[in-house]
Length: 564
Image (cartoon, rainbow, N blue to C red; front, side):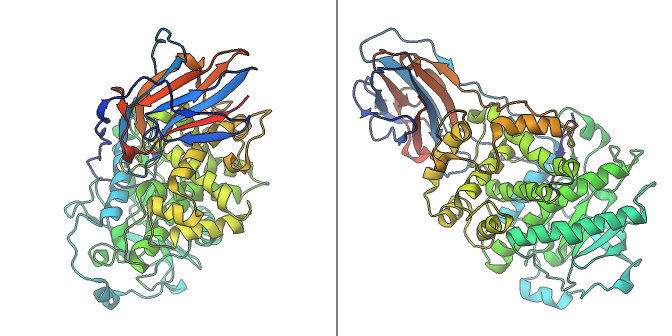
């Protein structure tokens, strides 16, 4: 199954290595600790480092149910630790069989995924393959000036990455023709693009959607782009070289995929721009129906795919401008940067409603599909992440978390109010957890605690979910089924949507809880405890995999909510 991924690539990945287990001696038996007393609908986040990992649940006079989420509320990217969650009766009893939280096997990153990871890591480190030559002040002497209508039909050359590492020895010179000029967009096409190619009508359609719809959405939601070349437009370069970043065999293999388009930070970085293209450029594939360059891409497929990629990549360009160029700080951390770009896709889709549901599906399907992949095994993926951004499930987590805080901390659900919030996330020198905490006015760990609960209880039927644990614009228990019907043909060749919410916690008695697995920064393992009427109380011990205290730095939390 070919996966469509957005961006650009370094050859090596940062593996999320498991940090050390707990410290000290084995925790004592759980006979006394935090005593819970929760009404239905109430919840509590318990820090196991403050109570020797021991939580005591009371006897139940009536049928009772709790949702338990063992979580790492850490803001440290890729942080992990083994854990056990062991329940027992208040009176001695036999140890229940262990339930290992199932972990999804990490998918092998495709060449396209690796390229994407390279781009975002290069932005973050500002370490591009070609050595820097000129500081920003020297760039001003090489400005090209505005592009005019009279320039239509003229050729110019561009330096384009020739492989997935984009080193100095791989840069290729591309000659391209200015095909369409809009108010904000100049659309160039590779002079060697294969035939049949885009017609003048096709090019007009792409220019219009870039220039009058997607540009306005992104700049309203995230702020303005830079203009270091003083030409007044963002260049869209449709070039054979993007198609050729992967081979036909790679893009059709089970672990393959293709690069649909990308933004390359070095083009506008003050210390690198003149070594590359010294301007704001979005690169995209060209139609290649006969597969002469790599895998085949029809004209209709390019018209459907490239606008979705553009609105995603343009957010990255805007973010880089505000964080690096204007405030001379670091690029936004990878997971939060990606979350904003995936949200941009959703915005693009919503702009076509209610009239055009087919185009809406084209933009939003990927985000919803990715979220379903995350919900199938949230314990297997990070939210706070810098190394796994190629994984679709990881992208699903990023989008879900941003959707949650948007719904909670925007003035209302209107585009205008949500844009006020997302602009704050982009137009700042802050990054990552500090950025999120500052813009919401809440601690990052509190947001994570509430988000994990919201994923299960937000639209739970027959349950009075607290307002702070709700998604407002999505009701995932029903929306998956609705979109499965509305969007029957997956536009990204990823597979079908589930019919219902795929987050299915394990279920068992309190004294039989016996979970083990790995805590991953931001995410959690879900379990539902059910007690019959008249059942005695029980305890739960939350420890590392060896029965010792969990590390404070992982910010371990046992999130408990009473459902019944």
